[in-house]
Image (cartoon, rainbow, N blue to C red; front, side, top):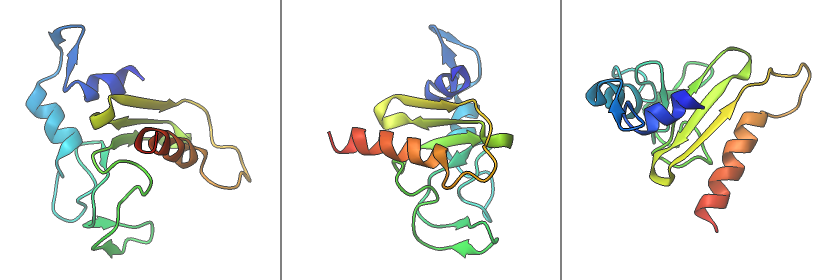
Length: 122
């Protein structure tokens, strides 16, 4: 959760610049290379087209993370750990629990979609 807030605030914490703001912008809001437009520097960006799907196929249109705001970005790690940031809304979502074997659906996707719907459709 704290890492998500640090990224949301471009490296600033409690009035002090802990991480260079330009670096944080590059990491979370710009692609790190041309092949995968949805990937920054260890952060995933929700971009419209220019991203690779789970099979490695280039997608020319459509959001990388449908249901989330287009300006969202996230750190998604092993076992379903994640921090998802909605910058335009000032929202950070953290998930710190393991993926349950044989669980249907993606709880993280369901949570982020529900939060996004609540914000977009008050």
